[in-house]
Length: 287
Ligand SMILES: NC(=O)C1=CN([C@@H]2O[C@H](COP(=O)(O)OP(=O)(O)OC[C@H]3O[C@@H](n4cnc5c(N)ncnc54)[C@H](O)[C@@H]3O)[C@@H](O)[C@H]2O)[C@@H](O)CC1
Ligand SMILES: Nc1ncnc2c1ncn2[C@@H]1O[C@H](COP(=O)(O)OP(=O)(O)O)[C@@H](O)[C@H]1O
Image (tube, rainbow, N blue to C red; front, side):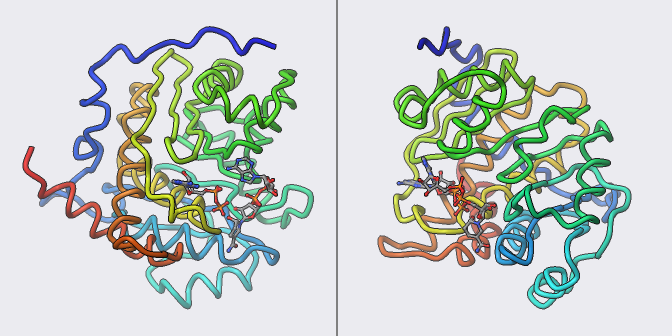
C-alpha cells in the first residue's frame, strides 16, 4: 500500500513555528466575549479526568470564557478545579470535542451538543471520541489523533493503513487523512506532524519524552482549543492558518512539559497548569 505524495510546506518553516504569532494579546477594547469563547464537549463518567485536564489547559493558555457540556458529575469535577467555567452550551467562537469520550457510551446531552457544534460552521477541534464524526463537520476543523486513532479513522474512510504504517510514514498518513476529510490533521507523537488539506506539511521538533504519560493528549487538545477560539476569525477567513496555530499549540505544550519536567517525570495536570507560563515565555522571548 502506498500512502501517496507528500507535499512540503510552501512558507518558511521558521515562520510556521513562530508560536507568538498565534497568541492573541487582549487589547483595551476587548471583553470576555470578544477575546474568544471555547465550547467544550469532553469527559464522561468513564473518563472525567480528560475534561478536567483539557479545561485547565485551555484556561491557562488564555481565553475569554469556557462553556462546558457534559454529564453533571463531570461538570462538578471540572467546576471544583475551575470555578471560572460556565456550564452549558451558548454562543462560542470555537469548539473542543471528544477527549475522554467513548462514542459507544455518549451522554445524550453531549451527543446533541456535539451534533450542533459540528453543524454550526464554527471552527472545531476533534479529539479521541469525536474523530469518527468528522463527516458531520460543516466548518473548519482540526483532528488530533495518535497513531492508532489515525489508523482507525483512515480505515473508516476506506483507506486500509495499519498503525505501523502510520508510525512509519506519519506525514504521508496525516496528509492522506487531511485530503480525505478536508481538515487539518495533527498526528501527535514525539515529533508531531501537522498536515493541511491545502498541502501544508510540518513536522515539529521532538518534545520531551516524559510526555508519554496518560492525559497529556487531553492537555494538548485544551491548549489547541484555546488558540483556535482566540484566533477563530482568522481561521474562518483562511482555514490553512490552522497549521501555524496547531504548531503553536504543540510548542506551548512542549514548553510547558519542559518547565514541568526539569529533566524528570511529569504529570499531565502540571503540564496543563504550566501552559500559562509557557505562553509567557513565548511572548517575552527575544524575537
Ligand atoms: N484521565 C483521563 O480521563 C484520561 C482519559 N483518556 C481518554 O481515554 C480514551 C482512550 O484513549 P486511548 O489513547 O487509550 O485510546 P485508544 O483506545 O485508541 O488506545 C488504546 C490502544 O491504542 C494504542 N495506542 C495508544 N497510543 C498510541 C500511539 N501514540 N501510537 C500508536 N498506538 C497507540 C495502544 O495499543 C493502546 O493500547 C480517550 O477518550 C482519551 O481522551 C486518556 O487521555 C488517558 C487519561
Ligand atoms: N515519546 C514521546 N515523546 C514526546 N512526546 C510524546 C511521546 N509520547 C507521547 N507524546 C506526546 O504526549 C501526548 C500524548 O497524547 P495521547 O496519546 O493522545 O494521550 P492521552 O490520550 O493519554 O491524553 C501527545 O501530545 C504526544 O505528542
